[in-house]
Length: 332
Length: 290
Ligand SMILES: Nc1ncnc2c1ncn2[C@@H]1O[C@H](COP(=O)(O)OP(=O)(O)O)[C@@H](O)[C@H]1O
Ligand SMILES: [Mg+2]
Image 1 (cartoon, rainbow over the protein chains, first blue to last red):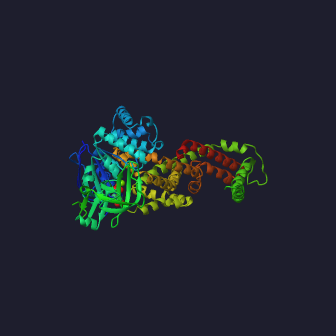
Image 2 (image 1 turned 135 degrees about the vertical axis):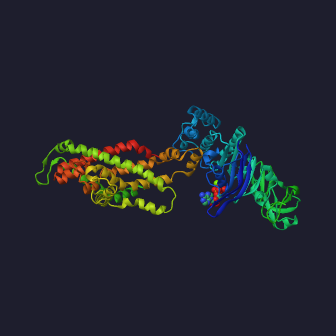
Image 3 (image 1 turned 180 degrees about the horizontal axis):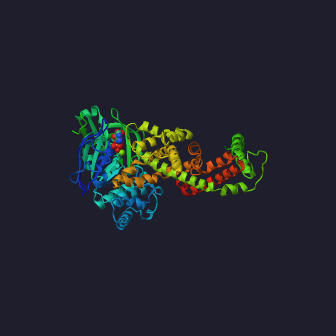
């Protein structure tokens, strides 16, 4: 079981309220991603759940029981740190079996569990190495192995992939998602990368300055962002956010339209602009179009789209995919 | 230093320093070596004759030599044990956040700045003196017989004094090492269910081995040559109870005016120090590799 409930959880460092009172329910078996810009309090929130920081106010419930004052080891949660936090002088085997040793698990049983974890994580041939002799991805897997053998109620990941190169990141992303599907254990995953959030999560929690901006499934956030912040944060490339007369014409303070929801034409359309930079990815082409009276708009064209810098182009936003936001930034 | 020309210039420029250093070391060493083969007593100047290995024979078969050797070892090992264990304990305490941390850290380092002669005299007269010393007062206040440290436990007293002097050094090195211990590792261990004690054994101790190695190596070099503390407190006595090799060499050459014997002792001390150095490097020097 791994149901985690946060009730009015508050964290202050001195006078600074990093997390103002926050409420959140995490269901058993869910893959929840906390996403938000750097410094918005994601790690702090995760550490509060782990018990590595004391809450200033509010309570944390794990499986219905109040765990606010329970020490980290007793909460039954396992954490994977950004720096991996492996024990440098211990072999991979010793690293993975450390929590078992601390729990007084029978050595034969521990060996069996470590071997199992190593097999799942492709670490079998590295068990006798020291962490210093492993690559970044392997270290990451050792850290995950150390978490798995404890059979925790929930896994906590703090930006586990941010130290890996792009290709490895995509691989590990898949591996972690797959691990979740095999283990079916609750996972809370912190990242500032909305692509990781979109691809991995059952439920995304968008944080901004310690506040929850929106909670929902990836597609809910994509389709119905609750406010300007979420609209701008979720989706790649970013949603075009337009203020001024064009927004007022539609009765909003800000309107948002995603790059993939603008139709292109070289002959006629609602907005007329000039092509700036065009990024050719092969599968897609992203055009940056300068339209008078608007910020530079990003537009996605499927496949290869043959326009050049300085060409005239017409844009038509798909009216039903348009997002309208009021003066308070909330969706209308 | 790319070109032949600049390399020659560089050699030329550092040569005065190198030559001076070489003379500085080689001249006294070779003179000591030379004297150690002479029958050379300051009471009979100008009567030097060739003595072969006699000086070495007498120095090495002197019963005082063996007690001096064992005293030296006990002194070094004793001080190392106290400073390393005490240093780790103090460093752990000083690493905790508490009010007035900065001041306390400076105070802890203070003994290191006191000259050996001064600190030994302070210990001898103000603490260990059986009549006026603080320990005597405490003992009397508790209704106990004052203990005459320097005559009944001379070597232990000297170990205590020297350890007091070196404790700050060990503490300082170990404290810096402790501060470089990764916080996330500690937290990971905490989540893995390791108690404070287990974290100390499995994380702190392995992390500190390198710093302990540095402390042991540096201190050993200095502790082999402890002299001032012995001279001002016990004069090597009673008998030879607190005589170490350094002090024995001094007693031979200056108290007995026997330059030849003293020189032989000096050479023996140099050889012993080198043996210890090789031994140490073999044993714990590998901890210093990456
Ligand atoms: N121990 C601390 N003391 C004071 N301020 C802290 C501490 N830890 C984090 N903060 C502050 O809390 C805010 C959120 O930090 P963090 O949770 O690490 O952000 P994130 O992980 O989202 O990048 C930051 O502004 C940071 O400066
Ligand atoms: Mg963080």
